[in-house]
Image 1 (tube, chains in turn yellow, orange):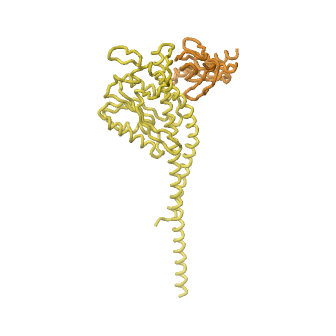
Image 2 (tube, rainbow over the protein chains, first blue to last red):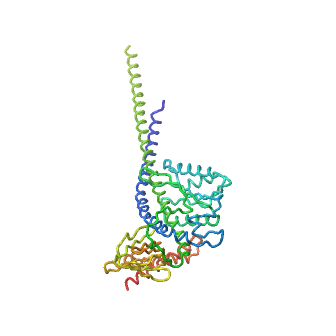
Image 3 (spheres, rainbow over the protein chains, first blue to last red):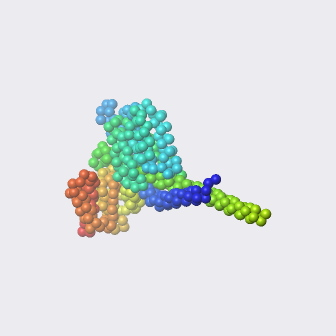
Length: 301
Length: 137
């Protein structure tokens, strides 16, 4: 049987761990408000920008191709007929540390499934978050290479981070002639739940319905090509920014929930040990009383 | 045709103006300032650092805009700015401090200074100060 001292020590350890978990939960819940606010503020930009590009879709598709068999820059971005089918990209956004339930596991599982499915193709991987970088770095497959990674940006994502990521993805997409880029991240659905999101972010799909407006013929200043040269990367970065903020909020929410559950479990464990402690102590006392009574009886006998 | 334009001013960080009805807008287009009245021909322009002004009920408001795009439709203007500050809220002293700090870090020849960032900061601060001066004068 465990001694009283052992049990007491055990309880103490559990209580102090619980305290740490509770603190982590508080920190997350304090940060999450800010993260949510940033996310809500960033949403209109990305959305309105999409609306605008959808308005311009006809103009893009009408752009003349530079040469036979070559695709114009903007067209590559939206249609991408000439990308190398054997080269694809993958953006994986995880957290920097665990302690967030299945937050990272869900993403990495999806990433592995994706990589398996495309194991015959060359995959350029962009990792945000330490967990993803470390995990994918360990895979060591000849077709998988990490071209960009960024760690430690949560929970302080800024537009600059999105710019760097967007820049890297664009560069690889055009220089390496990728045929598509897929994005895997966690969407912030509510405080209680995150949802795995996986979609092809390049070529850029414009499933937006174009507003019915027959006088939509745009003038461009400076020229239509120059506009697209700067507008398209901007659009992409705005989108990346939104995704990073979603991930950030989702990560904080997941941490909060995981820590809440963990500290509840710790509490239950400590209570159970408390009961055990009392039982052991009582058993000890009973034994002592028995000893005394027996001794007294023997003397009187 | 309506007599007002709907003005949206959005930055990646925040939506500053949400569907504000205005009478006219002046944009800092890359090729020079561009005035927009209701019924303007649809247009997409690239924006430079500069001042964005709009008239609402005879009153003029001004923002310092730090580059971006504007989509002009017949009855609305959507401005996608990299950054934007209300002219009234720009503090010249603060901007001067920013320039000073950036210049200091530029003159220190340490390795890990982001030169581009520092230069950009200076440019932005100067643009904000210009708009502020314009707004006051």
